[in-house]
Every structure is written in structure tokens, then in C-alpha cells.
Length: 103
Image: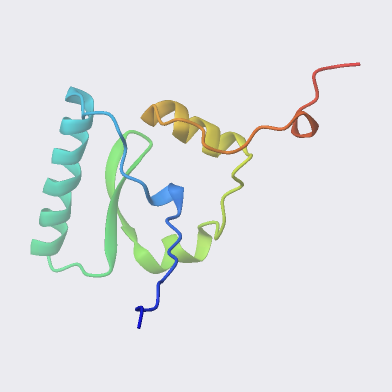
């Protein structure tokens, strides 16, 4: 008897970037980590660390969840920017009907 097979879908928005971290990435990650530790040692819980107006700040997770979009348009500008920044290939199938090249 054969064992049942499971089909799994991996959402591309959760993929790990395919390029090595540069100096800016390393500095940003270090700052995020340090600020997360500082917030925790100060007694805060239920927060995330982020960059707001070029300053590190503690963001309450309930507020982040309440105001974040639940979906991302795979044909949208935001997704195209993510692919460009992370140098990932666009695996979405291209069709002529999805793009207007003029009259």
C-alpha cells in the first residue's frame, strides 16, 4: 500500500531573500535586535521594533495587526518592488491580456 501524499503550497511572500546581506542590512538587523532586547529588559511585552521616520520605535503588535493589510496583490506595485529589492525572479506567468502596451 502506498502512503498518502500531501500537497503543500509555499506562499512566495514568505520566501527568504536570495541575495546575501550587505552592510546596511547588517546594521539594520543589529539595531532591530538591540532595540528588541532593550524593550524586553525595560519590561515591555507585545511589541515589535521598527523604523518610523528614521527613528527606531517600539510598535504594539495589536495595533500592527489591526492596521495591516491581510492580502497582497501579486500583480501590484508593492510585490514588484519586493521582487526588485530582493533580486528574486518574477515567477508569475505573463500574458498579453494583463498588460496594455498602447493602441
